[in-house]
Length: 131
Length: 285
Image (cartoon, rainbow over all chains, first blue to last red):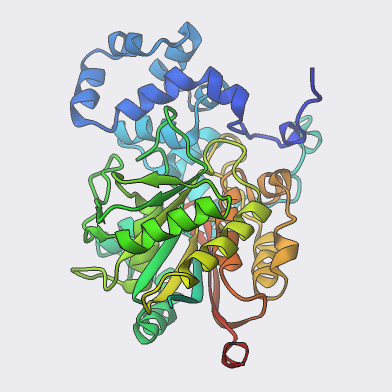
């Protein structure tokens, strides 16, 4: 066993490393398939059935069916791939970000206009303890 | 011989492309962003490059997880703007420069940079938004563009140092091309931003401005920024900034700053923009 990578200490972040990529291959390739209009239609017609094509775990399928965006990332999803599912649902990148941070669109937009989420207090998991 | 005379650096936020394409570039929200690029259009109109090399990253468009090249050079005659889920951007087809691109690819491999050669590739906002910012709305891009796609999606991306040295190798390649061509290289992506999970929306203006300072005066110091420092300080997607170091490596150590611009926010992202030229005095010696 090697030591835990130091980037695992960054709070609220899933670094898409080898471990995540291996875990999320099917999930991400499912998202990639949504680039095609015919596939988007097939997915919309039978979401659960369509997901069976990609060899995902039941947990991954469930995270997609319930649109649990952070859970998808935890289970190996990459944001540039899951954003294609969001686009299929008509959700913009900024609105997707709001959902993942647990605030509404206007609150998130106001935070960005005020300079974004500050780095102070957001560098280490230690700083998020007790939140 | 061909020569890289300057580099321009810019974020490539997709929402900037959407704002321009849908006529919202004069809205209160977007006007300050586009104002920061007026100089770029004027400058590149004067420089009139024969070829642009655009260092960018593909965002799960041309490359999915089945194939992940760390560095991939577009050698085709043209590259179609991709449909990224909301329709292809209404921008011109990107014409390549196969002769120079193949020359660079061969030179890089012999120079021990084992580049991936791409003959069929759609290009996404990572490439077309910088072109729009540099050239504005147009019916045809004014010069051929060679895409250089860098993997920054699958961790780890290449190190900043590797990117910087690739820039130097690209410069050697360009300078060994027999035709007289004026080349501008674009380094794109960044600046600080995080698109994913509970920390999304992170912006770090201090880090970004320090990075801009280093590009101007001490790029070697910028090459020492570690992956974890990028991820932690500039957000999980801020690590795209390693691509700026490819373009910076293609310039002289000492450069003149033509333009510098920084603005927060564009959607989820801090917008940074820098134009650097090789110092004329040095070039004349």
